[in-house]
Image 1 (cartoon, rainbow, N blue to C red):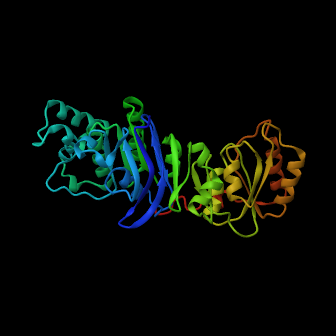
Image 2 (image 1 turned 90 degrees about the vertical axis):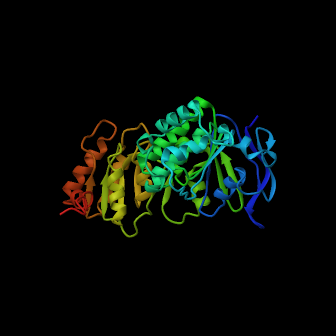
Image 3 (image 1 turned 60 degrees about the vertical axis):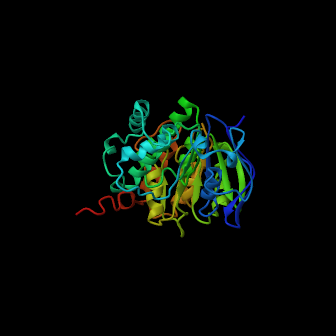
Length: 377
């Protein structure tokens, strides 16, 4: 039985309906992530599920009880919420803010006992904010605040944790630490997590299930590998330029316009920084010869004017070499990103020799390292 579910839920503000007929099922030990364009209603939906907004229709069930009928104190023992709303409690240290998470257990006087204080210290250590314990909450960075508020929520010892953009304001290290903490909580305490994320790559890596919010409804739901495909993400976000590559969880620039003047010889990941450097500089290029299962292939396909490909696991054929030579003849320069050749890609060594025999310019130093020392004397 799901610990949290919605039945034909309608969400919005006042009389303004934003999302309708939302049916969500969240079981213990699962991470369910909402994704979708800005303004689609993710935050509104989370606020309604958390009981902070009244539903415009339908019902939210927590442990099979109507959330609207539960007392706030009882709800707080099961469900905790972390939002992006700025909070500025005056004259409170970070430890005191975290301690607020124990209020469902401390009675009307809010007096923490030895076990409460032990949980507070353990939670600060878990979220890596012990060094902030005695600092004024209003004097720390937004990223540090986010971790303190997460600690406060974890202190409630919830069975369900709802988070609205928990990685906002965090650098990459703390994004990964925060989401890893959530994964540990799910695994060790069997809690259920419902959150909204902007970072599709993080949703792909940390979620058990993904719900896509668009056009006033849940547009699609399923496992990340089912949902986060290039064609669907393009449609969901209305992308008209560039591409999303699920293999890397990355967004790539549009293909540079114009006639290609450079041929990039790559493979095994060596060409990826070259392709991206040329795309940044809006230099059209050809790429090859790449096996279709090569690490370079998806990025080259996204950024190059044309990719000369070869079947996976096969040596590069004379036919593909000859075709690549016809493209090289139209270029004024080449870049060889490879520093060695093996049996399967020996044809690329022949291709490089051909480029040299034509007298083409080796453009590697000109384009790959351009701007390397930008901002330094």
